[in-house]
Structure formats: structure tokens, C-alpha cells
Image (tube, rainbow, N blue to C red; front, side, top):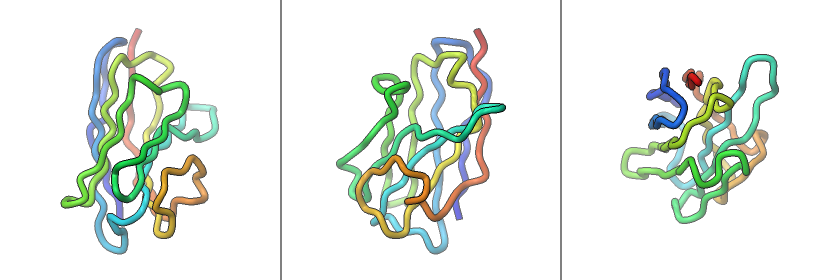
Amino acid sequence: QLQACGGGLVQAGGSLRLSCAASGRTSSSYAMGWFRQAPGKEREFVASISGSGFSTFYADSVKGRFTISRDNAKNAVILQMDSLKPEDTSIYYCAASSHTTIPTTRSRNFDYWGPGTLVTVSS
């Protein structure tokens, strides 16, 4: 089970920090990630991190602005979002894999999904 928090309303250029705590059948040994879905658009990959936390991968649209990290002691993943743009407005979903240890962009590699948290960036 995944539960994300930290969404909200922010002005362009501002920052938000999303966190996602995993419990139950999830394991800190496997990859975790963030995806997002804007109204009328398909879900897209944002960032992922390996089970160890040493490897990360980002979508080109957020590279240099977003940072993904994890706290394995708490079985949690964090997404620090800086220099936010109006086009970052979306529902953000955290995800956890039960079989992949390396960062991955494919949603099918993630087995557990959180309910989503809304991020709104005003211009």
C-alpha cells in the first residue's frame, strides 16, 4: 500500500516536496518511481530510483528541476520539485515495483500504485 502527500498549489518558479510511504507487501529492495497525469492526457513517467537509491532516471521534461530520493529505513520515496512550471500541473502518482531493482520508465514494471496527489502550478 502506498500513500503520497505533499501536493498543493504553488506559483510558477516555486517548489513542492512530495513524499510517498510504502507499507504492507512492498519492499525497500525494489525500484520506486513517480508518474503524472494531466487532464485529458495520458499518464507519463517522471522519475524512478533503484532499490539501493544509488541510481536514478528522469524524464527530459523534469531533468535538472526534480530530484528523486528514498529513505529505505522508512520505505519511502521523495520527489523534490523545484522551478515548477504551469505545465507540471498534474496528479502525481507514486509507484513501487515488486520485481525490478533498477530504475525503470515503464509503468508495467510497477506493481503497486498510490491514489495520487494533485499538484497545481499557477502562472
